[in-house]
Image (tube, rainbow, N blue to C red):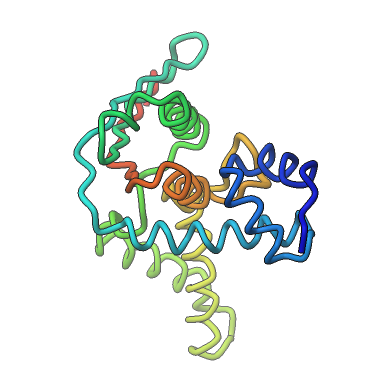
Length: 198
C-alpha cells in the first residue's frame, strides 16, 4: 500500500519517529495514523527490551529549580554514548523529567526501588482500612492490589502520567519511545528533590 507523504509527516510530528519507521507503521496500519501510533509504541517496546541489557554509562545530571527557588531537582539520566547525551532531544528529555519530578514528587524511580518493608506497610494500611468492611478475604486482597497499583502510580516516577503531554502515556512510555528513536539504552538512574520546609 502506498502511503501519502502528508500522513508520514503528520505521524512524524506526533511521534518524533523517523521517516522510515513512520512509513512502515502506516503501511502496517493500513493508513490509519491512530493505529500507526499504536504500532510505533509496540515496536518501541520491543526495541527497548532488546536495548535494556546494554550498559548506559554516559549521560547527564540535569538540574531544575522551580520558579521562586522553593523546589529544586537533580536527576541523572544515562545513555550509552556521549554523542546521544549531547543531542537536544536527550537534553530536553532530561529537563522534562526534572520538571516532572518537581511537579509530581515521586519517591523512587521504579517499583523495583520501593523497599519491601514499605510495600508491606502500605498493604497493611489498606487491609486495616478494609478490616470492618465485611468483604471476603480474597476480595479484600484484590482491592489491596488495586490500591497498590494506585500507590505505584503516585510514588514511582516511571509509573506516573507524563505531565507534559498526557496523550503520551506514562513516563516509562516516553522513555521507551526515546530508546526506540536514539537506538540506545536510556536509563533514569536516580534523582533528588529538594523543597523548602520539607
